[in-house]
Amino acid sequence: MKNAIRTAALLTILLAVHSPANAADEYKWIGQVTEEGASLSYAIPESDAIKIDFHCERKTRKIVVSFEHEPKTAKDGVRLATRLSVRGREAGTLDLVMTGQRLEFDDKFLLQGEIRMGPQLRRILAEGGTLVVEVDGQMEEIPLKSVAQAARQLLASCPG
Image (tube, rainbow, N blue to C red; front, top):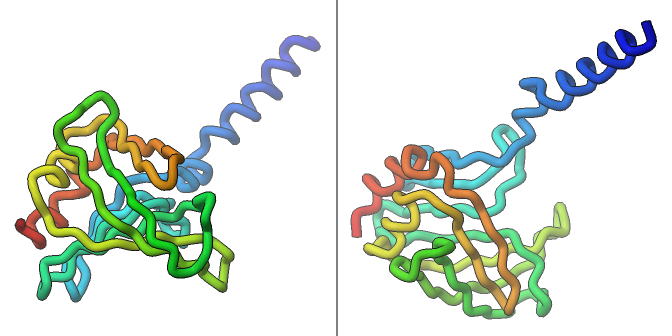
């Protein structure tokens, strides 16, 4: 009888952990068309939690890259070299300079930089694997699972 109660309690916990409500709390690649162009975000749906975002402005064809990250030198206006690459692949490395800013409403530190669509970024967004973002000697890994499907709108709206 005790084993049956223990098993039932464990099943209840497992179901609660893997329920659809908790699945909504997971980061996912989300692509969308906007009035100004298109965006691709690694974010928690229906929240303001965005780890990295690529937004293409249709008029300029520039892509604004935003990355939430707390670097060692986190002060407004700091300019940091940033490298985007896919773990295990030498081809497709992309370097850009990003400027940091502390967001007042939630105390997050946001880095932003501009790039143009090119072969390196296309490879990163189309081939899967793990995105490695290197800033100020720190590396962060972001899974690229299902990124290709979500990136279609960005790639179509912002040709090189």
